[in-house]
Picture (spheres, rainbow, N blue to C red):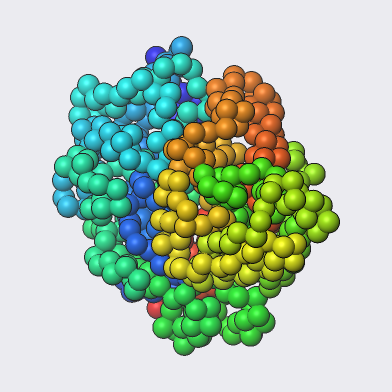
Length: 523
């Protein structure tokens, strides 16, 4: 077997610097202290395998680890694996595990735990389609895990390393834990101390954590990680004004989102550091195609024609946005404007003509949204107004974020017609991670009985399996065009997220997920 170029480059080059330039591994300039993070949305579970919500990921990614993850530039890197070798025929991947890794319950991690983790994910993992092309896996010894493929898939490592809904490694005795009921025991730098849904999750330093010595510094959600602070408390603070007030008083040391209207005053406060992150997420609405009238293509296209994206995004973000066609950010190499003819049409006459074609007779339409994320709620309000302007009897159903996600995932649900969300981590991870949201199981637009559109599925398969990278990009453009033309999703635009910390919180760098390893409190 040959060593994969990926594993070789990571282990040989660390962070890509010449060997002579590498400094000593990161050490905490200061240890101890507590950080309270103001999170804007509720969390109902920390089961990383069965939740794609940002609110779950924010907390759980500080607790769990995977065989592989992504670096600062979203390139695949090793995490719990020490090495990865790919066979010459591309049909076998052999992972050697890092030794000395222990779970938060004190149990040493072995390949038996990796097998159990893959078994559970294959049974109930939200994006278990990642494993569709896998023929099987086994563990010939306690520190070796082998994956065998049905056929060559050049994108498998990209899919495996995604932290959208990662295959986190859990103790083998938790393999049969049911969906959303996983006991919270991982191998990460922080362990769970307390979790009260709707209130807070408190994490504490895991003193048994073993940093990955193949690296010198934190990178992405991997690398050399150390818990410098004693505890991190994720406090659910859904009101933006309360987050700002908590930051100003010092009750909160960091916050997930700062509203645009508060930025000027906070910038004048020397005790606070503002941290903007462009292209935070793509504001989006998904139709329920399992039930009428949103199962009717002419109706979905009428909705598409009725919407003006500037007004929606302006309301959603207080003007802090960019119009954006499709499912990748314009700065990414995978970006395409395929299907742009469907975007930002804002033509009421065309919308009414399509409504007549659809046979719509004024039935009530439910737009499912939440107040935990104001951009989603405000986008839904403007969408409702624009639909009513063309004769659609649109109504809002407002619940908390976890409830809206649960409702959106019910097969053949008649509780909603449009679901408002934000896609951020997935677009940042690339086209493959994003478009996985649009195929079964778990396609966000809810096809009836989870039966995919065969044309969309064919494009998805080409995205995964074609050998030529240019051909895979063409397949992505084809899939995006199909999704937009058939109105399986309505991307509105991309927003900028502004985070903030108290000035004495050091080395907190904005990322897709708040990272509290290698972060310290200056005393």
